[in-house]
Image (cartoon, rainbow, N blue to C red; front, side, top):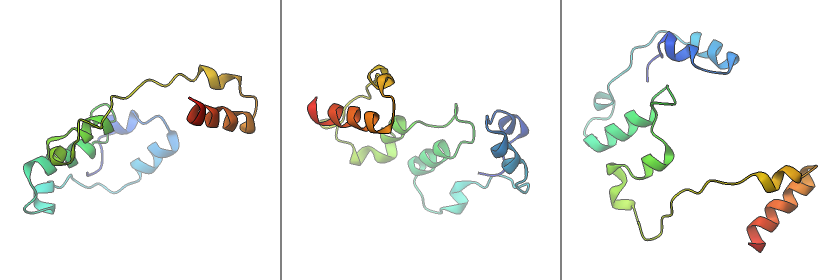
Length: 110
């Protein structure tokens, strides 16, 4: 991955993480083709997309699962689209036990 640019480091929200990353030694990005000889173009693309420091440029889990490299493992018959979860129900929980009860009722009663 190499050390990220200062622009990318400055975009990290957590100040402790920023400090940690700034303290890393300077290291240029190494081409994965050289580190993993014989790897397919699809694998290199998936890994490069996954190893992005900048979260907006990084591939999502949903996109990664649909990547060409994993095509042979996909089963569109059993996959569903992600659904937005509504947290409104859980706002009424006053403590951890109440929250656990709501989660269990949501899992087993619906």
